[in-house]
Length: 318
Image (cartoon, rainbow, N blue to C red):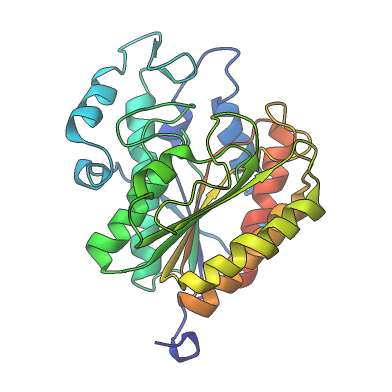
């Protein structure tokens, strides 16, 4: 069906839940509840009054199990402490609220996929934490428990019958977990721009899966012009060639010049630009269907401004 033949519900959906604020990581950990609080505070501005807001349900284990083995899911949830903290690795910390937070993140993005797949919304942003794109099928890492964006892709295919799903990742860190989930599956396209060399050490240009993976490493100090050129030259043409029926975006904002954990030099406007390019691709190929989820971003002011620029671009496209 051509997008011009489609009747659009002109809506951008925002999904979140207070449980995502109860995932505590320790006093000095950068992936803190204050991150999500800053994003949500920014989205309370009158400029975002058109957002359709919804509380996320708890994610379903059967959805998670399309990406993560049952024994892994059980191990993560059983590691959640009743009080204080536990650690899955030196970076990935759990508190009493972490289990529900992780499940809410999954519930948000699967509900968002349902909404855009059924025409209830044009696009959606999931303001949730913990992030997900570093979680490999059998390993939690890099602040991430469950790979929400990968789970969303599998739900789109299994429940809604979409055959070609694209995942675009503009977080400053390579989405190693997402790549690991799909590097042998040509039905899912994954593209990432990221600082390299940098954590987690993956994402070299030669890592191409079965022809479905596009990695664009960016040197430390890359500014907006270089970022945009990388997308225009490498990622967007490959995305068009893939012609997805749904676009999913790992929306990390830690490539901002103010971010303390990395060394790229992007501004709020660069995140608005890449979001607009993705909404245009969604219109060409996917009846406008686009779902994004919050990944990284650790300077609170930069995170709030970048996320607001991202959501503003979604609203303009709805």
